[in-house]
Image (cartoon, rainbow, N blue to C red; front, top):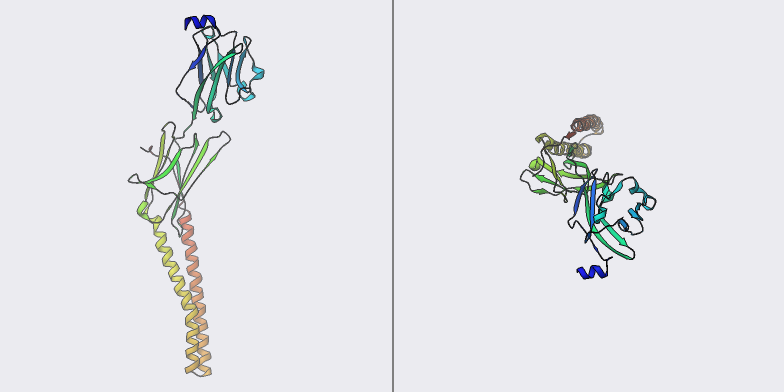
Length: 309
């Protein structure tokens, strides 16, 4: 190797971190690479880029920093530490890490026509301890419970669990990204009876393992609406049946057995009864709307609790 380096002094390799670097959003990231064997790199071209060689995020050439050739979004956010450049080591510093910085970074040392590179993998991460649960008013289908949390990267896993820790199938899941490319998560659960009164919304970051959760215990009164609704519907259907069938049946009977005068009197009586039944039906409908209005005022927004384990 010694004789090879004497005959070809420009030959070298580039080394650096082999493991993936995890960088939280908003922090400062440092990426180093080193010539092997160590040698002075002040006269070399040192280029850092992401996916395209011609779009450097930092460029050192002819002994100076070439800010005019750096892609704009990295000009104000990067600097190259050259304290050890005499031994062939440089460090790229990136400020205010954001999700766009996730991915691979190529470090190239070039001496004349000869060059070597090292690739470092960076994983950007963000989490949020704030998890909110929103309970909607009961409906004929059951109680709808929503879980919200924002500010995550990468997209977290999200699920509902019961009091035993078993996964409950969600009614729906959705996500969106804000202008900073952080994920906002939403998961909805439909509870049809009180068998799942105690539920927990769980999120965790698959990269860092960060876990957050919020639990809620729904009162039994939230599920009494199904019984009340079924009872009211049954009463309405019964009254509507009586309202439609009884008058016509009664009239047919009276028409056969009674005189015209008696038939007219009974017809008037049936008309009065029809009016009374109609008023009762209106009152029942008003009661339904009153009950629904009361339940609508019971929407609850639950604050975060202990982390899921």
